[in-house]
Image (cartoon, rainbow, N blue to C red; front, side, top):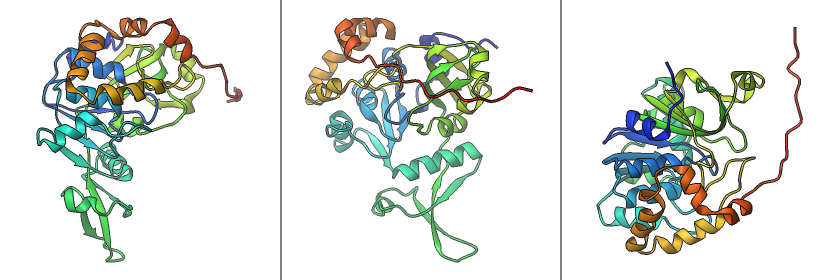
Length: 300
C-alpha cells in the first residue's frame, strides 16, 4: 500500500470528528503543521491528548476543534499559562483530565502493550487522585500494599513528527526522545510527518535510531519545518520569540481569531506558512551542523 501522501489527505483520511488524537513530541518535534491542518479542515469534538499541550492545543481549542483535553502539565513553556485552554476549562466549556507526566506515559505504555491498565509508583502529584477518577489504587498481590494504576490510553490517531523517514514509514528521530514510540504503538492509526523522506538504505544504515517502524504507520507526509514554533533537533531552532508573542496574542480571543485567520485559514499548506514567516525568521532559526561521531556496525 502506498503510504506517501499529502498531510491534507492524511488528516482527511484518518482523523474523524470525535476522535481521540495524540500529538506526540516532547519539547521538540511537536507536529504543529498537522494541528493547523485539522483546524483548516474544521475537525470537531476531538479529544486532544498530549503530555504537554503546548501552543498547538491552545490554537486548536481556540478554533473550536476540541471537546476535551487530556494532559500532564499545561502551559506555555517558559512563559506562563495556556490562556485559551485554561479559560475554556474554567468556563466549563472544555472537559479535561490531568495526570503527572509519569501517569500519562504509563497510560500510553499500557495501551502500547495491550494491557487494560498500568501500575506505577506514586508520584508527588497525590492531589490528582481527588480530581481524576481514572487514577485508582489496587492491592499488590505480593506485598499487599496499595499500588497506583491508570487505564490504557489507545488514541484513534497518533501524529508523530520525525527528522527523517522512508516512504514506508520507517523513521529516525534523535535529540530529546519523548513518548513518540509509546503513542504510535498505542494508537489505532499513525500519521507520520517528516523533515526529510530518504531512501530505505539510509534508515537501514542505523537501525538503533529507527524509533518508529513502518509496519505501524498508515500515512507518511513530507512536511519540512512542521514543528514551528517548536524545533527539530539538527534542522532549526525553537522560535522563543513566538512563544513570548503568543502570550500577548492569546490574552484576547479576538486577537487569536485574527491570528488564525491570517496564519492558518488563509494559508493553504505548511510550506506557504513557512514562506510567509520570511527569510529573517528563517535565518534566525538556522542551526550550525554538529554531527555525531560515526559508528561502525560491521559487515560479514
